[in-house]
Amino acid sequence: MFVNTLIWVYSNLCNYLLNGYHLEVQQKEMRINDVRKVDLQSNFEVVYQWTHLNYTWQSEEHYKWALDTKRYIPANNAPTGLKFYQQRLFLSIPRYRPGVPATLVSLDTHDETSHENPLLSPFPNWDSNDDIGSCSNLQSVQSMEVDTRGIMWVIDGVRINNYTRCPAKLIFLDLNNEGRELKTYIFPEKIASQYGGFLNDIVVDETDGDFAYITDNSLMDPGIIVYSRRQNVSWKLRDASMRPNPKAIPFTVDDVLFDASVPVDGIALTPYSHNGKKRLYYCAMSSFTIYSISTSVLKNKPLVTSGKWRRRIRSEGEKNSQSDGIMIDELSTMYLTMLPFSGIASWKTDLPTSTMQLVYTNRETMVWPDGFAFDQQGFLYVICNKVFNYIDLKRTPVISGDTPFRVLKTFTGTRSYLYR
Image (tube, rainbow, N blue to C red):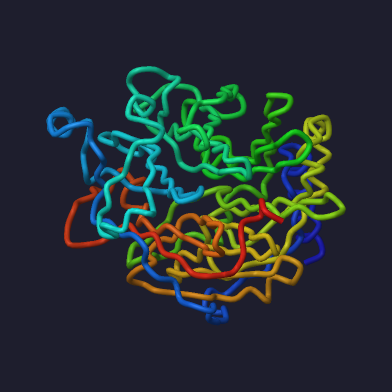
Protein backbone atom coordinates (compact mmCIF):
# COMPACT_ATOMS: atom_id res chain seq x y z
CA MET A 1 0.00 0.00 0.00
CA PHE A 2 2.78 2.39 0.95
CA VAL A 3 4.69 1.53 -2.24
CA ASN A 4 1.60 2.13 -4.38
CA THR A 5 1.11 5.51 -2.72
CA LEU A 6 4.71 6.47 -3.45
CA ILE A 7 4.29 5.45 -7.08
CA TRP A 8 1.10 7.52 -7.33
CA VAL A 9 2.73 10.61 -5.83
CA TYR A 10 5.82 10.20 -8.01
CA SER A 11 3.72 9.82 -11.15
CA ASN A 12 1.73 12.98 -10.40
CA LEU A 13 4.88 14.88 -9.50
CA CYS A 14 6.41 13.96 -12.85
CA ASN A 15 3.28 15.20 -14.61
CA TYR A 16 3.56 18.47 -12.73
CA LEU A 17 7.25 18.97 -13.52
CA LEU A 18 7.02 17.90 -17.15
CA ASN A 19 3.66 19.31 -18.13
CA GLY A 20 3.05 22.12 -15.69
CA TYR A 21 0.09 20.29 -14.15
CA HIS A 22 -1.52 21.53 -10.97
CA LEU A 23 -1.01 18.74 -8.43
CA GLU A 24 -3.97 17.71 -6.31
CA VAL A 25 -3.42 15.10 -3.60
CA GLN A 26 -7.06 14.29 -3.01
CA GLN A 27 -10.29 14.90 -4.85
CA LYS A 28 -13.58 14.49 -3.07
CA GLU A 29 -16.25 12.58 -4.95
CA MET A 30 -19.49 14.56 -4.96
CA ARG A 31 -23.04 13.35 -5.29
CA ILE A 32 -25.21 15.29 -7.68
CA ASN A 33 -28.32 14.93 -5.50
CA ASP A 34 -26.49 16.46 -2.56
CA VAL A 35 -27.67 20.02 -3.17
CA ARG A 36 -29.99 22.20 -1.12
CA LYS A 37 -32.74 24.23 -2.75
CA VAL A 38 -33.91 27.66 -1.59
CA ASP A 39 -35.99 30.37 -3.22
CA LEU A 40 -34.96 33.81 -4.38
CA GLN A 41 -37.28 36.71 -3.60
CA SER A 42 -39.03 35.92 -6.85
CA ASN A 43 -38.84 33.05 -9.29
CA PHE A 44 -37.25 33.40 -12.68
CA GLU A 45 -39.78 34.61 -15.20
CA VAL A 46 -39.58 34.28 -18.97
CA VAL A 47 -38.90 37.62 -20.64
CA TYR A 48 -38.32 36.51 -24.24
CA GLN A 49 -38.62 33.18 -25.99
CA TRP A 50 -38.11 31.90 -29.51
CA THR A 51 -39.06 28.83 -31.49
CA HIS A 52 -36.40 30.04 -33.95
CA LEU A 53 -34.39 33.20 -34.54
CA ASN A 54 -35.19 35.70 -37.26
CA TYR A 55 -33.86 39.14 -38.09
CA THR A 56 -34.79 42.66 -39.14
CA TRP A 57 -33.94 42.19 -42.80
CA GLN A 58 -33.11 45.12 -45.05
CA SER A 59 -35.99 44.18 -47.35
CA GLU A 60 -38.22 41.28 -48.34
CA GLU A 61 -35.85 40.62 -51.24
CA HIS A 62 -32.89 40.45 -48.86
CA TYR A 63 -34.74 37.89 -46.74
CA LYS A 64 -35.67 35.72 -49.72
CA TRP A 65 -32.13 35.92 -51.11
CA ALA A 66 -30.68 34.77 -47.78
CA LEU A 67 -33.04 31.79 -47.69
CA ASP A 68 -32.43 30.84 -51.32
CA THR A 69 -28.63 31.01 -51.00
CA LYS A 70 -28.57 29.27 -47.59
CA ARG A 71 -27.02 32.35 -46.02
CA TYR A 72 -29.91 31.99 -43.60
CA ILE A 73 -30.87 28.53 -42.40
CA PRO A 74 -33.36 29.25 -39.58
CA ALA A 75 -32.86 25.94 -37.75
CA ASN A 76 -29.09 26.52 -37.40
CA ASN A 77 -29.27 29.76 -35.40
CA ALA A 78 -28.83 29.56 -31.60
CA PRO A 79 -28.02 32.37 -29.10
CA THR A 80 -25.35 31.83 -26.44
CA GLY A 81 -24.19 35.07 -24.79
CA LEU A 82 -26.23 38.02 -23.52
CA LYS A 83 -25.46 41.43 -22.05
CA PHE A 84 -27.41 44.58 -21.23
CA TYR A 85 -26.59 48.22 -21.78
CA GLN A 86 -29.15 50.88 -20.97
CA GLN A 87 -32.35 49.63 -22.61
CA ARG A 88 -30.79 47.27 -25.12
CA LEU A 89 -30.29 43.53 -24.86
CA PHE A 90 -27.37 42.14 -26.85
CA LEU A 91 -27.10 38.51 -27.93
CA SER A 92 -24.33 36.52 -29.58
CA ILE A 93 -25.11 33.83 -32.14
CA PRO A 94 -21.95 31.85 -32.92
CA ARG A 95 -21.57 30.26 -36.32
CA TYR A 96 -21.43 26.65 -35.18
CA ARG A 97 -23.16 25.76 -38.44
CA PRO A 98 -23.70 27.46 -41.82
CA GLY A 99 -26.68 29.74 -42.36
CA VAL A 100 -26.14 32.22 -39.50
CA PRO A 101 -26.45 35.68 -41.10
CA ALA A 102 -25.52 37.72 -37.99
CA THR A 103 -23.34 36.68 -35.05
CA LEU A 104 -23.97 39.76 -32.86
CA VAL A 105 -27.46 41.24 -32.52
CA SER A 106 -29.50 43.57 -30.33
CA LEU A 107 -33.05 43.98 -29.15
CA ASP A 108 -34.73 47.14 -27.88
CA THR A 109 -36.32 46.22 -24.55
CA HIS A 110 -38.56 49.32 -24.78
CA ASP A 111 -40.44 47.60 -27.59
CA GLU A 112 -43.29 45.80 -25.88
CA THR A 113 -44.89 44.55 -29.10
CA SER A 114 -43.72 40.98 -28.73
CA HIS A 115 -41.93 38.77 -26.26
CA GLU A 116 -42.55 35.75 -28.49
CA ASN A 117 -40.07 35.40 -31.36
CA PRO A 118 -38.99 39.08 -31.39
CA LEU A 119 -36.89 39.99 -34.41
CA LEU A 120 -33.18 40.61 -33.84
CA SER A 121 -31.19 43.48 -35.35
CA PRO A 122 -27.61 42.78 -36.49
CA PHE A 123 -25.20 44.89 -34.46
CA PRO A 124 -23.66 47.28 -35.25
CA ASN A 125 -25.14 46.62 -38.73
CA TRP A 126 -25.49 44.04 -41.47
CA ASP A 127 -22.18 44.85 -43.14
CA SER A 128 -20.11 44.26 -40.00
CA ASN A 129 -21.69 40.80 -39.65
CA ASP A 130 -20.72 39.71 -43.17
CA ASP A 131 -18.26 36.91 -42.46
CA ILE A 132 -17.46 36.41 -46.15
CA GLY A 133 -16.56 39.98 -47.03
CA SER A 134 -13.52 40.53 -44.81
CA CYS A 135 -11.70 39.12 -41.79
CA SER A 136 -12.17 42.53 -40.17
CA ASN A 137 -15.89 41.75 -39.94
CA LEU A 138 -17.43 39.68 -37.17
CA GLN A 139 -16.92 35.97 -37.84
CA SER A 140 -18.24 33.92 -34.92
CA VAL A 141 -18.95 35.49 -31.53
CA GLN A 142 -19.58 33.35 -28.46
CA SER A 143 -19.70 36.03 -25.77
CA MET A 144 -19.01 39.64 -24.83
CA GLU A 145 -18.87 42.04 -21.89
CA VAL A 146 -19.88 45.70 -21.51
CA ASP A 147 -17.74 47.84 -19.21
CA THR A 148 -18.92 50.77 -17.08
CA ARG A 149 -18.12 53.26 -19.87
CA GLY A 150 -20.39 51.59 -22.38
CA ILE A 151 -17.65 49.85 -24.34
CA MET A 152 -18.45 46.34 -25.48
CA TRP A 153 -15.55 43.87 -25.48
CA VAL A 154 -16.44 41.25 -28.11
CA ILE A 155 -14.54 37.96 -28.36
CA ASP A 156 -14.68 36.77 -31.96
CA GLY A 157 -12.94 33.45 -31.53
CA VAL A 158 -15.09 30.38 -32.25
CA ARG A 159 -12.87 28.53 -34.72
CA ILE A 160 -14.00 24.93 -34.29
CA ASN A 161 -15.16 24.41 -37.88
CA ASN A 162 -14.19 25.33 -41.44
CA TYR A 163 -16.62 28.22 -41.85
CA THR A 164 -13.88 30.79 -41.26
CA ARG A 165 -10.11 30.77 -41.24
CA CYS A 166 -9.77 34.32 -39.99
CA PRO A 167 -7.65 34.79 -36.85
CA ALA A 168 -9.38 35.17 -33.50
CA LYS A 169 -9.79 38.75 -32.34
CA LEU A 170 -11.08 41.06 -29.61
CA ILE A 171 -13.17 43.99 -30.84
CA PHE A 172 -14.07 47.14 -28.90
CA LEU A 173 -17.42 48.74 -29.80
CA ASP A 174 -18.64 52.08 -28.44
CA LEU A 175 -22.27 51.57 -27.43
CA ASN A 176 -22.66 55.30 -26.83
CA ASN A 177 -21.88 55.91 -30.50
CA GLU A 178 -24.01 53.34 -32.35
CA GLY A 179 -21.44 50.60 -31.93
CA ARG A 180 -18.57 52.43 -33.60
CA GLU A 181 -15.48 50.24 -33.69
CA LEU A 182 -12.77 51.71 -31.48
CA LYS A 183 -10.10 49.06 -31.80
CA THR A 184 -9.43 45.47 -32.82
CA TYR A 185 -6.77 43.21 -31.35
CA ILE A 186 -5.70 40.13 -33.32
CA PHE A 187 -4.65 37.23 -31.12
CA PRO A 188 -1.41 35.48 -32.07
CA GLU A 189 -1.86 31.91 -33.27
CA LYS A 190 0.03 30.57 -30.24
CA ILE A 191 -2.51 32.26 -27.93
CA ALA A 192 -5.81 31.60 -29.72
CA SER A 193 -5.66 29.32 -32.72
CA GLN A 194 -7.63 30.04 -35.85
CA TYR A 195 -7.55 26.29 -36.45
CA GLY A 196 -9.65 24.90 -33.61
CA GLY A 197 -9.65 27.65 -30.98
CA PHE A 198 -12.80 28.39 -28.98
CA LEU A 199 -12.87 31.68 -27.06
CA ASN A 200 -15.80 31.04 -24.78
CA ASP A 201 -16.33 33.68 -22.08
CA ILE A 202 -14.85 37.00 -20.94
CA VAL A 203 -14.69 39.23 -17.87
CA VAL A 204 -13.25 42.75 -17.77
CA ASP A 205 -10.97 44.17 -15.07
CA GLU A 206 -11.05 47.99 -15.07
CA THR A 207 -7.80 48.41 -13.14
CA ASP A 208 -4.21 49.06 -14.22
CA GLY A 209 -5.22 50.22 -17.68
CA ASP A 210 -7.91 47.56 -18.27
CA PHE A 211 -7.49 43.82 -18.60
CA ALA A 212 -9.64 41.05 -20.04
CA TYR A 213 -9.60 37.44 -18.89
CA ILE A 214 -10.91 34.99 -21.48
CA THR A 215 -11.48 31.23 -21.40
CA ASP A 216 -10.23 29.21 -24.36
CA ASN A 217 -12.57 26.24 -24.32
CA SER A 218 -10.77 24.36 -27.10
CA LEU A 219 -9.77 20.74 -26.63
CA MET A 220 -6.46 21.30 -28.40
CA ASP A 221 -5.17 24.12 -26.19
CA PRO A 222 -7.47 25.04 -23.29
CA GLY A 223 -6.49 27.83 -20.94
CA ILE A 224 -7.11 31.36 -19.71
CA ILE A 225 -6.00 34.25 -21.90
CA VAL A 226 -4.98 37.57 -20.35
CA TYR A 227 -5.19 40.71 -22.48
CA SER A 228 -3.73 44.06 -21.40
CA ARG A 229 -5.43 46.95 -23.15
CA ARG A 230 -2.76 49.42 -22.10
CA GLN A 231 0.07 47.26 -23.45
CA ASN A 232 -2.03 45.78 -26.27
CA VAL A 233 -0.53 42.33 -25.69
CA SER A 234 -1.87 38.96 -24.56
CA TRP A 235 -0.53 35.88 -22.82
CA LYS A 236 -1.99 32.54 -21.83
CA LEU A 237 -2.13 30.38 -18.72
CA ARG A 238 -2.38 26.61 -19.09
CA ASP A 239 -2.87 24.19 -16.23
CA ALA A 240 -4.44 20.81 -15.45
CA SER A 241 -7.08 22.58 -13.32
CA MET A 242 -8.46 23.91 -16.60
CA ARG A 243 -8.87 20.47 -18.14
CA PRO A 244 -11.80 18.03 -17.92
CA ASN A 245 -12.18 15.65 -15.01
CA PRO A 246 -13.31 12.16 -16.13
CA LYS A 247 -15.38 11.85 -12.94
CA ALA A 248 -17.68 14.59 -14.26
CA ILE A 249 -18.37 12.77 -17.54
CA PRO A 250 -21.07 12.03 -18.66
CA PHE A 251 -24.19 13.86 -17.50
CA THR A 252 -27.74 14.15 -18.76
CA VAL A 253 -29.70 17.25 -19.78
CA ASP A 254 -33.25 17.06 -21.14
CA ASP A 255 -32.88 13.27 -21.49
CA VAL A 256 -29.82 13.77 -23.70
CA LEU A 257 -26.58 12.13 -22.58
CA PHE A 258 -23.74 14.65 -22.77
CA ASP A 259 -20.48 12.69 -22.84
CA ALA A 260 -18.03 15.24 -24.24
CA SER A 261 -14.86 16.20 -22.38
CA VAL A 262 -15.20 19.97 -22.03
CA PRO A 263 -12.34 22.02 -20.50
CA VAL A 264 -12.35 25.45 -18.84
CA ASP A 265 -15.59 27.28 -19.55
CA GLY A 266 -17.11 29.39 -16.79
CA ILE A 267 -15.19 32.43 -15.58
CA ALA A 268 -16.11 35.07 -12.99
CA LEU A 269 -14.35 38.07 -11.43
CA THR A 270 -14.83 39.48 -7.94
CA PRO A 271 -15.79 43.17 -7.62
CA TYR A 272 -13.32 45.93 -6.84
CA SER A 273 -12.25 46.05 -3.20
CA HIS A 274 -10.67 48.85 -1.18
CA ASN A 275 -7.39 46.94 -0.96
CA GLY A 276 -7.40 46.54 -4.73
CA LYS A 277 -7.39 42.75 -4.56
CA LYS A 278 -9.47 40.75 -7.00
CA ARG A 279 -9.77 37.04 -7.66
CA LEU A 280 -10.66 35.26 -10.85
CA TYR A 281 -12.77 32.12 -10.48
CA TYR A 282 -12.95 29.45 -13.15
CA CYS A 283 -14.08 25.89 -13.74
CA ALA A 284 -14.12 23.34 -16.53
CA MET A 285 -17.57 22.28 -17.65
CA SER A 286 -16.54 18.65 -17.20
CA SER A 287 -15.50 19.15 -13.58
CA PHE A 288 -16.98 19.70 -10.13
CA THR A 289 -14.11 21.81 -8.77
CA ILE A 290 -14.02 25.61 -8.66
CA TYR A 291 -10.57 27.21 -8.74
CA SER A 292 -9.43 30.79 -8.24
CA ILE A 293 -6.31 32.86 -8.66
CA SER A 294 -5.39 36.44 -7.78
CA THR A 295 -5.52 38.93 -10.63
CA SER A 296 -2.15 40.26 -9.46
CA VAL A 297 -0.75 36.92 -10.61
CA LEU A 298 -2.61 37.00 -13.92
CA LYS A 299 -1.32 40.49 -14.71
CA ASN A 300 2.30 39.53 -14.03
CA LYS A 301 3.46 38.33 -17.44
CA PRO A 302 7.03 37.46 -16.31
CA LEU A 303 5.60 35.34 -13.48
CA VAL A 304 3.22 33.59 -15.87
CA THR A 305 6.05 32.98 -18.33
CA SER A 306 8.21 31.44 -15.60
CA GLY A 307 5.55 28.88 -14.72
CA LYS A 308 5.83 29.63 -11.01
CA TRP A 309 2.31 31.05 -10.95
CA ARG A 310 0.73 27.58 -10.65
CA ARG A 311 1.48 27.36 -6.95
CA ARG A 312 -0.84 30.36 -6.51
CA ILE A 313 -3.89 28.48 -7.80
CA ARG A 314 -6.42 27.86 -5.06
CA SER A 315 -9.00 25.09 -5.05
CA GLU A 316 -12.16 26.66 -3.63
CA GLY A 317 -13.97 23.37 -3.22
CA GLU A 318 -16.56 21.44 -5.15
CA LYS A 319 -19.98 22.11 -6.55
CA ASN A 320 -22.66 19.50 -7.03
CA SER A 321 -23.14 19.78 -10.76
CA GLN A 322 -21.47 20.50 -14.05
CA SER A 323 -21.75 24.18 -15.01
CA ASP A 324 -21.56 26.33 -18.10
CA GLY A 325 -21.69 30.07 -17.32
CA ILE A 326 -20.91 31.63 -13.94
CA MET A 327 -21.04 35.27 -12.82
CA ILE A 328 -20.39 37.31 -9.66
CA ASP A 329 -22.42 40.34 -8.58
CA GLU A 330 -21.29 43.52 -6.81
CA LEU A 331 -21.67 41.85 -3.38
CA SER A 332 -19.41 38.90 -4.33
CA THR A 333 -22.25 36.41 -4.70
CA MET A 334 -21.61 33.95 -7.49
CA TYR A 335 -24.41 32.61 -9.66
CA LEU A 336 -23.79 29.32 -11.42
CA THR A 337 -25.66 27.43 -14.11
CA MET A 338 -26.38 23.87 -12.94
CA LEU A 339 -26.82 21.90 -16.14
CA PRO A 340 -28.21 18.50 -15.04
CA PHE A 341 -30.61 20.27 -12.67
CA SER A 342 -31.81 22.72 -15.35
CA GLY A 343 -31.30 25.33 -12.69
CA ILE A 344 -29.31 28.09 -11.03
CA ALA A 345 -27.23 28.01 -7.85
CA SER A 346 -25.84 30.84 -5.73
CA TRP A 347 -22.77 30.93 -3.53
CA LYS A 348 -21.31 33.67 -1.34
CA THR A 349 -17.66 33.43 -2.30
CA ASP A 350 -16.38 34.28 1.19
CA LEU A 351 -18.00 31.07 2.49
CA PRO A 352 -17.19 27.40 1.81
CA THR A 353 -18.67 25.88 -1.33
CA SER A 354 -20.66 23.55 0.94
CA THR A 355 -22.98 26.54 1.51
CA MET A 356 -23.83 26.73 -2.20
CA GLN A 357 -27.59 26.60 -2.76
CA LEU A 358 -29.76 25.65 -5.69
CA VAL A 359 -32.09 28.64 -5.97
CA TYR A 360 -34.21 27.68 -8.97
CA THR A 361 -34.94 24.73 -11.25
CA ASN A 362 -37.34 24.26 -14.13
CA ARG A 363 -36.94 21.36 -16.53
CA GLU A 364 -39.26 23.00 -19.06
CA THR A 365 -38.11 26.62 -19.28
CA MET A 366 -34.48 26.35 -18.13
CA VAL A 367 -32.97 23.61 -20.28
CA TRP A 368 -29.25 24.30 -20.58
CA PRO A 369 -28.83 27.67 -18.86
CA ASP A 370 -25.80 29.10 -20.61
CA GLY A 371 -24.78 32.61 -19.51
CA PHE A 372 -25.74 35.54 -17.29
CA ALA A 373 -26.18 39.30 -17.43
CA PHE A 374 -27.22 42.04 -15.00
CA ASP A 375 -29.09 45.20 -15.86
CA GLN A 376 -28.94 48.45 -13.88
CA GLN A 377 -32.28 47.87 -12.13
CA GLY A 378 -31.20 44.91 -10.00
CA PHE A 379 -32.30 42.08 -12.28
CA LEU A 380 -30.26 39.00 -13.12
CA TYR A 381 -30.86 37.46 -16.55
CA VAL A 382 -29.98 34.02 -17.89
CA ILE A 383 -30.16 32.66 -21.42
CA CYS A 384 -31.21 29.04 -22.00
CA ASN A 385 -30.60 27.49 -25.40
CA LYS A 386 -30.29 23.68 -25.64
CA VAL A 387 -26.92 24.39 -27.21
CA PHE A 388 -26.05 20.68 -27.41
CA ASN A 389 -28.37 20.42 -30.42
CA TYR A 390 -26.29 22.97 -32.33
CA ILE A 391 -22.66 22.48 -31.35
CA ASP A 392 -22.81 18.70 -31.82
CA LEU A 393 -22.68 18.23 -35.58
CA LYS A 394 -23.96 14.66 -35.25
CA ARG A 395 -27.33 16.14 -34.29
CA THR A 396 -29.70 17.85 -36.72
CA PRO A 397 -31.56 20.90 -35.38
CA VAL A 398 -35.15 21.24 -36.53
CA ILE A 399 -37.85 23.83 -36.01
CA SER A 400 -40.82 22.20 -34.31
CA GLY A 401 -43.36 23.12 -31.67
CA ASP A 402 -40.52 23.28 -29.16
CA THR A 403 -39.25 26.55 -27.68
CA PRO A 404 -35.48 26.01 -27.33
CA PHE A 405 -34.44 29.60 -26.59
CA ARG A 406 -35.47 31.68 -23.59
CA VAL A 407 -34.25 34.70 -21.67
CA LEU A 408 -35.39 34.64 -18.04
CA LYS A 409 -34.90 37.12 -15.21
CA THR A 410 -35.17 37.40 -11.43
CA PHE A 411 -34.71 40.29 -9.02
CA THR A 412 -31.56 40.20 -6.88
CA GLY A 413 -31.28 43.91 -6.07
CA THR A 414 -27.66 43.92 -7.23
CA ARG A 415 -25.58 44.77 -10.27
CA SER A 416 -22.63 43.02 -11.86
CA TYR A 417 -19.11 42.76 -10.44
CA LEU A 418 -18.10 45.85 -12.45
CA TYR A 419 -20.14 48.26 -10.32
CA ARG A 420 -18.80 47.85 -6.79
